[in-house]
Amino acid sequence: MSFIPYGRQFIDGADVQAVVDVLKGDWLTQGPAVEAFEKAFAAKVGVKHAVAFCNGTAALHGAYYAAGVGPGDRVVTSPLTFAATANAARYLGADVRFVDVDPTTLCLDPSKLDPLASEGLKVIAPVSYGGYPAPLDQIIPFARSLNAVVVEDACHALGAGRNGRMVGAEADMTVFSFHPVKHITTAEGGMVTTDDDEFARRLRLFRSHGIERDPSRMSRCDGPWYYEMVDLGYNYRLSDIHSALGLSQLSKLDGFVEARRRIAERYDRLLSGIHLVELPPSHSGHSYHLYPIQVPEELRFSLFNLLRDSGVGVQVHYLPVHMHPYYRNLYGFDPEDFPNALDFYRRAISLPMFPSLEEEQQERVVKVIREFMTRRA
Ligand SMILES: *Cc1c(COP(=O)(O)O)cnc(C)c1O
Image (cartoon, rainbow, N blue to C red; front, side, top):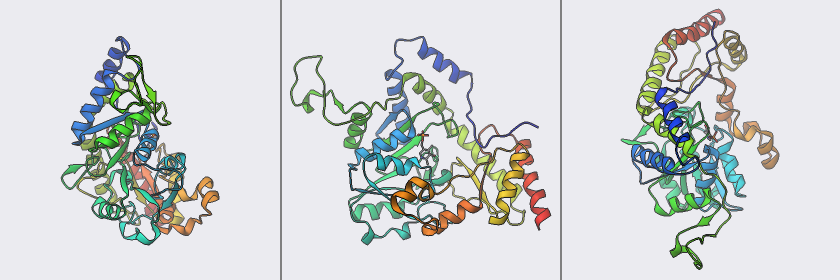
């Protein structure tokens, strides 16, 4: 029986041709394809600016930089995320604070945000976990009251909707990743969207060595060759090769999201009658990067192994960030410090979720779960 991964890219002939065309042209590094991808991405999301980065982690780093994060500042995020959401704040010398998730949304619980504990707060980085749009309605006013910037980590949530807008249009800045398991891929790649001209300018500065080329912003200008470095930036640029793939992938986004929603509905239906299986939270704007079920803690390990042995590439997303040795050692965290994230971690299994997942494959996955649960009941 063939192995079913938990996620995988969908690449067609048009994608391949788009990359080949760039390879035959004049520009390989950041050039016209990057600009075209950024323009199309901004238009799709419904924002003024989209700034491409070489991966989602670099994009997070850039967004925190643009927000003005520096040594000693605080960045608040959810413990239920990929470590990069927190790491990018550490790159800038900031301190990370976690706020536990709401078990019904699996996103940062806004009712746990505490103004008294928010001294030095620079950024709140809610994570739209699994593609469920994080509750910005409550987070944005809290951030405004403390002059903090909202950077949404929407690496799971391209194509998701909230309040009649696309995810990416509401936070001060929104970060996306184009890793192959995400909604669209450029192999490695990332993007930050924003309506703010100053954030966009700082994002562009940061991704290219901190180099300024606008004469009106330079300390002097010695001639047409002249540029100067005004802050310490990085080489975080995306190439034209990657961007051509991204632009071609973006034209298929609506279909990808529809397929993911259809697959989620089918899982919901097939799994709903099974004893002790909890379904992921639903939301009309959900774009389903992941489909995480929860089962009783004492059954998770054996069900996970049985699925793997049956050729189903299940995964657990994620070990909560505060439990990684780096963060435990840095801040002295106890696993129980964020009990909802811990509880989810102990019970979660991400089922296969990708646009080309076939009905027959889904039924195979569910059959393993049903038979296992029936034996335990
Ligand atoms: C994938 C991901 C990232 C990092 O993206 P890369 O492109 O792999 O660097 C950050 N945050 C979350 C929640 C992610 O899923």
